Image (cartoon, rainbow, N blue to C red; front, top):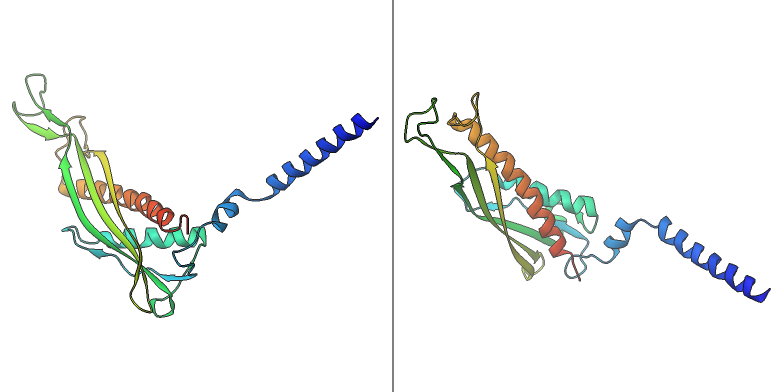
Length: 196
């Protein structure tokens, strides 16, 4: 009889532990251990500086970082005049490299012989993010992030004949940079808020 009581008691305790784990949200468990360096709760995210030759990229990166802080609720994003720390970013460099190339030969009836067309492009990007205390300008954290993404050259009508208007390529490039901005700012948010 004593063995049955101990067995049912163990099952009851195990069941209560499982219920407690299932009732908690894993997302909230992770947030509790994450903080801004110094434990600050109000931050500002000024528009990123753009040192690259590509205009307009700073918006995607700034919005990506703000979105990550709003999503995680580690700190509240407020106006610069009300913040305790500023999370500032700089787009250091962006480069575009043609990837795979297609050379037209005798098998292609659509392109002149010897024509070389890029069939994909690579984007290489470097971004620096730092956390600065507003009161005295002390840098609390800094990190550099690099990203690389390859995308197929835009194609119009015939496959393999992808020499299109530069606006098509610009649109594809911007879409890929927006995706890179989201990925890199998620990584930046996670690295800023880990183990403090």
